[in-house]
Amino acid sequence: MALSNYSCRFGLKSIPNGTVNLFKIFERFHYGNLKRKFTSRSIDPDEVKRFSQNSSKWWQTTDYLPLQRMNSLRVPFIVNSFKSEWFNRGSKYDSEENIDSIRFPLKDLKLLDIGCGGGYLSEPLTRLGADVIGIDPVIENIKKEFSSDPNNQNSFDAVIASEVLEHVEDKASFLQNSIACIRPGGFYIITTINQTLLSYFGTILMAEYLLRLNPIGTHQYEKFTPPEVLDLILEDYKCRVLKRQGMFFNPITFQWSWCDDQSICYALLAIKN
Image (cartoon, rainbow, N blue to C red; front, side, top):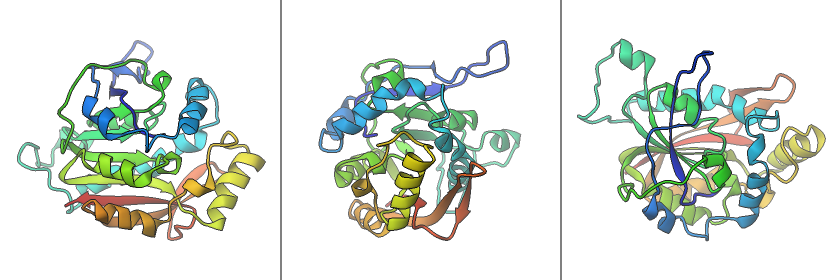
C-alpha cells in the first residue's frame, strides 16, 4: 500500500459493552504536502485496486489474521525501540518512570503509520498513549477525507511502514519522502519481506496458493526487498540502521516469533541522522 493524500487520526472511545471504537476521529487532516511528496511514482494502481476490493474484509474475515497476529512482535518492537538508549525524547517529554509512563509507554509520541489499512497496528499504538496518524491510499479504509495541515515535515517521532514496502513500486522515492516526515533523531520502523527463494515459497506458494492464508495476488516476488538493498537506500537518505531481526510465522499455531534467520521476513529499526 503506497501513501496517498488521505489520512486520519486514530483514537479510542469507550462504549457501553466495553469494546473500543477503533476509528474514533479526534481531528481532521488532509496532508497536502504529503500528497505532493508521495507522487504516483511510488503508488502502484494495481496494488491500490487490489486492496480497495478487499477493504471491506479487514475486520470481517480471517484473510488478514496473520497480519493481526503480527502485533505480538511489532508492538513490543516499537515500544522497546522508544525505551532504548538510541531514542532521545527531548525536553518536551516527561522522562520520569511513573505509573502513567508504564501504562502508556508511548505517551506524547507522534507516530505516522503508512499503509495503515484497517488499523490493525494504529489502534493498539493509541492504546499505549501514542498520537497516531494512519494513512492509506484506499479511501474505504480511512472512513473520511481530511482538511489541510502543512506541518508534517520533520515532525514525527517515528514513521512506521509495516508490511508496506513489498507493495510499493518506487521504493527509493517512497523511502525518501517518508524519511522527510521524521524529525532528526526519530525512528524509521519497517517490517517487510526478503527477496529469496525461501520467501517466495513461504509467502506466495504456501501462504497464498496452498494454505490460503492471504488472498491470491497479495504479494509479487519482484517487489520484495533484500535487507542489504534497504540498508543502502536508507543510508542514502541519512538514516542509520540500528537493528534488524528475522521474523517467522507458524502456519500451524498461527503465531509469530523472532528468529535469527532473516531470509523470509524481517523487522528493521533505523534512526534519522
